[in-house]
Length: 210
Image 1: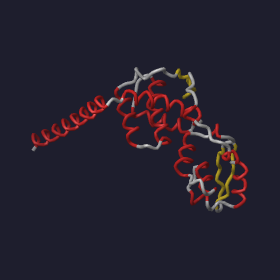
Image 2: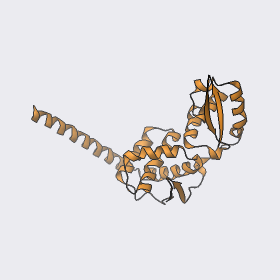
Image 3: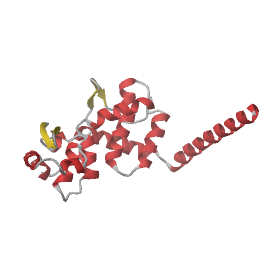
Image 4: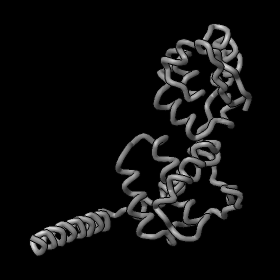
């Protein structure tokens, strides 16, 4: 990564620029796929730098010329991240994590939240950090803790997409293979039963206290 200093009104804005597709992070990939209209350089620069397009449109022309020279690699053919092979290990939070060959050891909590992630959006860039975080959090800390997943998601967003997308593809394919209609219907039914039970319990406590 190289740093560019963009001049916006009366202040300088630092921006880290990848030198190739291999340095593109997960968060950058999400912005490129979701926010770059592939028509204007302003939207491209905004996606790479993580700035609002209105801000990027008002940086000085000199700053824009600097960016032109730094993002020439975008014209190269993008890496097909999903086609890359999953590494046997991944460096994460200072630990070398051995990647599993299956997800047989996942917990019901991981399965439930991962399923919700997949069903909540069809945009892969939004799925990637969430799904990978669900599995790596347990791999790093030993037990699954949903409240800790967000911290891992932030870290994953700053990691190279070339390292994370193959991991996502592995977990996604394994998860989909487990999602038989009968199992999903059973899980949803159990969730609804629990919700109704809680509602009935709350109403009963309200009646008794009145």
